[in-house]
Image (cartoon, rainbow, N blue to C red):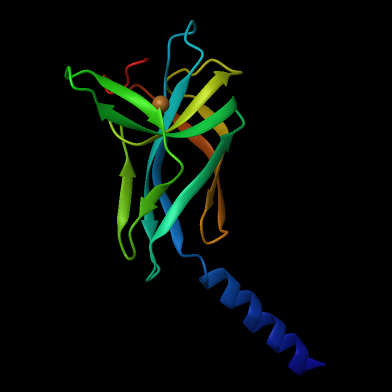
Length: 148
Ligand SMILES: [Cu+2]
């Protein structure tokens, strides 16, 4: 009996240690009340020896979320486009930032005011890990996102 209990404890602690991913400094861009879309940025740390991919996102604050990047058009203009995944190289971190990769939030159901927070953002990765970010702060971001 005690042996089984100990074994269970070992398994639980292994599971706790098994997380390969850490998300740091997540925030959501504040937008004027007339805008229906926003974006979220963060640093994702991959502590494993394998490349991992962010493959899915959603949020309590938006009807839809997509993974986006910015591309430069021939005329020098920047445009956003959807990507299937965002790579976080093995034993490295990758930062989603204004003007680069971001989690796009479509059809907001709440005003995004500086100083408030977004209840949750859920991120799923290629290793089947899912991370739920709670109370993500809303910040003012200057530039970096042009609507197409
Ligand atoms: Cu976007």
